[in-house]
Amino acid sequence: MSINPLNELKNGNIEFLYHFTDMDYNITIANIRTASNRSEIVKGFLKKLINDMPSFCFDIIYDMDEYKDIALKLIDKIEITYVKFSNIIDYTCYADEFIKKYLNTYLNSEDKYIIKLTKYALDNKKDYLIKILSRNTNLHVRYVFMKELISNYSLLIDKVYDDISKYMSSVTYEEYEQLTFLPSLMNVEEVSDLAVLLLQVGKKKEYEKVKKYILKEYKYNYLASMLLKRGFDKKFKNDSKILFKTSIDYRLNIYLNYTELVSKKLLKDFSSRIKRLLKDEEYYEIDNIYNNCLGFLLEEYIDKYLELSNSKECLFLGSGTTCSCYRIGDYVLKLIRSKWSYEDIICPNLFLIAKNYEENYVRDRRGIVIAGLEVQKYLSRSANNIDSKYFDLFNEELDRLGYRHNDTLVNGSCGDNAMLLDSYLDADTNNPEGLPSWFKEVPLVLVDRDRVYNKNRKSIKQLSNKY
Image 1 (cartoon, rainbow, N blue to C red):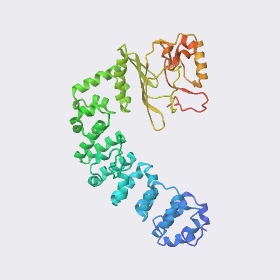
Image 2 (cartoon, rainbow, N blue to C red):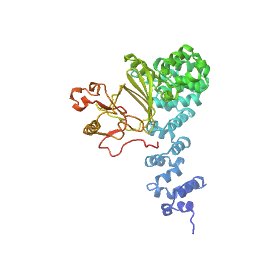
Image 3 (cartoon, helix red, strand yellow):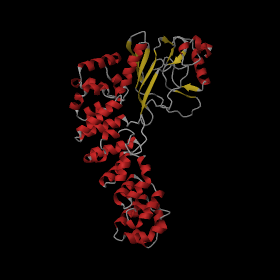
Image 4 (spheres, one colour):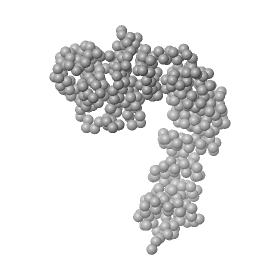
């Protein structure tokens, strides 16, 4: 005979629940919550199930005022999902108590929790919470608050901040605040986003203030890309000189697609740099570098290493699986598309490996390198014709130092990964005279700083060939 769960629970019979599926639980919870005699049903089972099934009980009673104290105690025993979090904020009489007790937990959680708290604070005029969020020492929390304020509560901006541009650093202007000469700055992408958001909601004066602040405090910014992507071409054109120069990610795109908005002089200066790195006008070679905010470093390295070089030759050397290589005077500039290794340390610094004078990588959330720059000394001496014993000596020495590599040194499918230094004195070491005698005779080094691992590691972080 089938049972009626609600009647059974009302009468204090709970044993059947221990055989329920998740779907059964959800249906029962929904039926109890909509029952006209919910209070009577809860009285029948609550004391018996509160310890064994706290989540089941909470989902039924969380918004019943008479069970407020029990609900607050149950919160410590269950997982508070975002749905539960939202329900507590929206539908309970103890939302403020919950927020004050657990606020720090949720301020260090996903942005959606901060947005929910912001909406609650602004909708309900919760001054205590508005103050905490709007002046938070965690500048990302402050950014999320500001973004929601600007996007959906723009009429309240002046009530929350006397001047929003003043609150985009760690300074809060609170009484008794201990001021510092070097306040922390909000993430440049986030502060650029806030500036353009102000334009989007019609707050032009506020935009001008924040723009001025950004140009003063940050060497590079995202204003150009965000203005152009959101249709504010005219605003960009009004400040095109400074915005082009300070763009962290969009200089190449502007050069290719927005020439009518920028002066010919600026474009000519930019072109004179990047054309050193072009092969038949194929911009895709450097597009990934600019898109990942390394373009300004690329330009700096070109100028820096040409200045340091005797040779002023610039030419394309070739492409491999993971990078493209360019000669810049006496150096090689590598434009990285990826790395086989995604270890925390991609490659150790050893005398057997060509020294990186510059090394910058951008990784995705998994730690995989998606863009990068490396600068090494330009080497012209091939290792193709040396005696094979030197490759054995190289591998033995690498093993002695505690490492192994899993790629070919020469004559690989993608070319050579090893070359000879001009002199052993150029090796990456503080004691060149202490190097092995064979290395002094034949200074063989790995030039591809990848696929070198601690020899004792059983599991390595390396991309597969199918990646």
